Length: 522
Image (cartoon, rainbow, N blue to C red; front, side, top):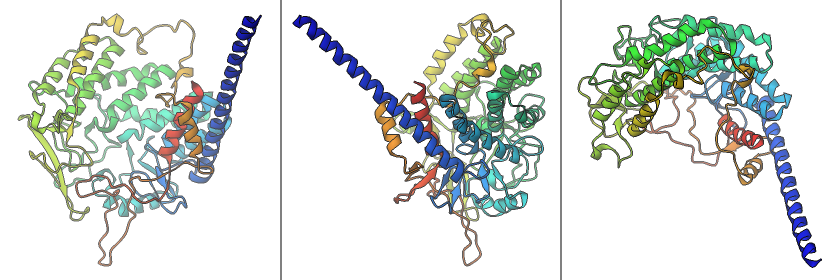
């Protein structure tokens, strides 16, 4: 009997322990839900401007900035900002079912639709005070932001840079599919049509559309009409059109998708330098962009494009996308940095490689602002430009291994799960319900991390210190305008605020919400 009692007691303790753990987990989940909703209400009701956001704010909202200082009437489209906040809201809605998050996402959509340009895309920011206020921003803050040359001129056109059009369009697609609410379809259709209409016949896209070439700089052509790979211009538009094809089911998307993929083949350079540049002029020559971006081949883009070509083979089953990958890998092998220039083995290549010579080109700068500042490039790898990176690291062995794996796949094997392949979805699962699974991915945090995030909530907000801050527009007594770029040293290395000043940060909110969302989904 004593043995039975011992067994029963042990079982009873196990059950109590399990129940206690279950109760504690449920309690922490409720606390996480409460913290998420509290922080979100603050962002939506206290921080946003007409549903839009920038990256950082002073707690009293006297200053705010995205990539640069912003007016109180402005919101930033690019991440971290309005689009990324909207995606977090939809993630939270998917994880909790709380309609407040869906309503917050709708407010984001309202801001984006207000700021959608007549042709269907978006600029970097939206100014709810209108065109006059935005032009004033460009004539003060934008034109004096040394190094941020994409803000020097007011184009009044849509940009594909940094997913500033494919990002909002993808968010509107996601919101439309969430409840099939037709009120979002016109703005979505307008963005889709822009992306289709702005594609060049050869398959690439410009940085901006409608096309303009009225802002040459330092004797060089305006590069905004060039075929542009930089900052996911072409790949971002292709990915968006693929999502449209999957979820809207219209055959008209297939031709621009295929032409976009083919453009990677057209622009690969001939041997022995079988790589890619980041932009090309109308003669398909590798071209310059900003003052620190020479017309050069780029190992980093070549690495990315090789991986994309393998992806495109798995989407299409067409082996032409694999045909010249060995040439690209061979070129990457040929332009490796010598050991003494590899920064202790941490870098493999120069960021820019000169066409013809295979020598590394290195960008530098000196000065204090737009008026006296100067960029140049040469063969000297000392005092490298810090805000761009003069050297990079490429895992060539990974490329080789991945190429061998994908190359061994038959076309049928490669395209087994391709969304571009004609076929019936046998289990009847609607693709609309699967897009996207979530934009919040990563490791699931443990209870300790979750408790720390909840405790870090300062009443109703998460605050952050020691970040890189912007410079406000200012004029010296002699009438000269000061540099408005973010704080940095002469080489462009960012300087963070070392004081104890706290800031409201959409990036911090998004990070913490992502962790809590993953915790609830576990």
